[in-house]
Image 1 (tube, helix red, strand yellow):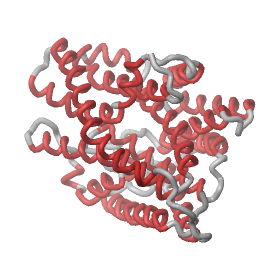
Image 2: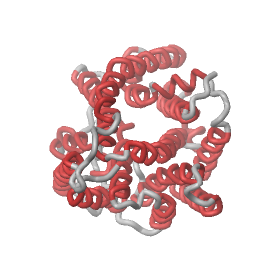
Image 3: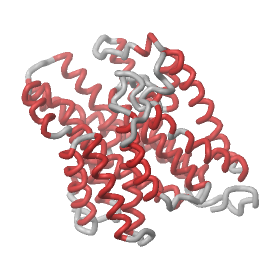
Image 4: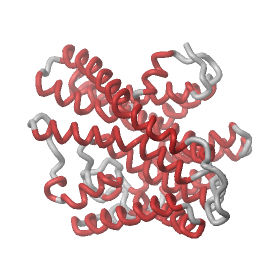
Length: 389
C-alpha cells in the first residue's frame, strides 16, 4: 500500500485500462453470447473510457495551471502522449503487413484524411477510423487540451462548471452528425484544415507572444466544432452522434468541476447540481448503468483519496497508457495463434502487461525524461508581451 497525494488517480487509470482491455478480450474468453449479455446490462468499454475522461478533466487543467506556461504545458503533453502513440501505430502497421491485423479500409481509400487524422490525433472526429479502435478517445483528449489551453489564455479557466453544464444541455438538441465530414472530399478538407490550424496554434504557443496566444486560444476553442457538428460523420467512428460526442467532453469538464470544488474554487451546491446534470446526460446518451457505475467508482476513489492505495493498482496506473494502446495488438497476435478461451485469457494477461511495461519503460519514460528539462522551472523573467506565468 502507498499513499502519494495523487495515487488514487493512478489507481483509477489502472482500473479503467484493465476494464477496457477485459471488455475487448471478453468475446474470445466468455464467448460472444455471454459477452453480449453483459454488454446489454452495461457497456464496460464506455465505462472505462469515461473514467479516463474524468481523470483527464481533473488533472489536465491542474497541470496547465501548475506549469503556468503554455509552451511548457504543450511540450509536456506532446512528449507524454505522442511517442507511445506513434510506437503503437508502427506496431500495428507492422502486424498489418504481416497479415496478423487488418488495416481500416479508409487508410487506403481515404489516405490523405486518414494519415492527417492520425498526425493530429483527431481522426475519429474528422470521420476516419484509427488503425487501432481505442485511438478514438485520443481525439476527445486533444480537443479537450485545446479548449483548456484556450480558456487559460483568455483567463476563463475557472469556467469548467459552465462548460460541463452547457455541453450537456447542448447535447440534448438535434445536432448535425456529419456537417463537416459527410463525404470523402469533406473529410480530406477538414483533415488538412485541422492540421494547419493545430500547427498554427502550437507554433503561436511556442512563440509566446500575447496577441498570437490570444488568437491561438480562440482557434483552440474553435476545435469544439468537430464534436458538436461532426460527432458521427461515418459508421467507422465510435461516437454514436454529435450529442454523445458533446456529452463526452462534458464528462471531462465534470472532472474539472470536482477539482474546483475540492480546492474551494467552486461552491458545493453548484458543483453537485452540475455533476447531477452531467450524470443525467450520460444516462441519456450512453446508458443509465454506465452513468451510475462511473459516478460510484469515481466517487468512492475520491472519497478514499487520503487512504492507502493498493500498489498493484498504482503500478497499473503507471503503465495504463501503454496498456490501453497495446492490448489490441497483443490480442491480435494471440488470436492469430489460438482460439482456446483459457489459453487466450492467460496469454492476453501476460502479453498485455509485458507489452505495457515495455512500452512504458522504453518509450514513455525516455520521452518523459526528455520533457523534464523543458517543463521544469521557468527560464527567467519574460518580456511583457509574453503570456504571464
